[in-house]
Length: 110
Image (tube, rainbow, N blue to C red):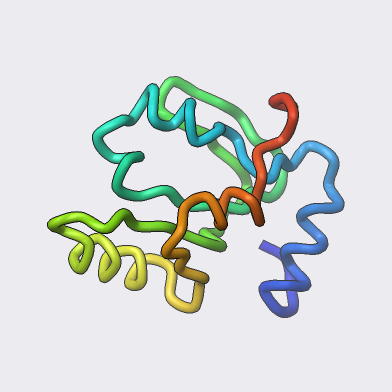
């Protein structure tokens, strides 16, 4: 994942050309995982080689850097699960704001 602070590791990962800010757009996530993606979306920083497979993406290292949970019946449970899985990461209450700060790349780079 790199050394130093989260910001320092993020800057070093972003300097690697093959690392996209996002692998899928929110629309692609909703198309493939509608039931889940309409309730939870996370931004994951990947480092090293990234290989897309049938069930997702494999990389040398990955770290959740931000997440959004919809306002729904199980918001508290979903938020608690996200906080437990990624302590210290940023929670967004507006999905569009998160996507604006972590935009998908213009096209997928493999």
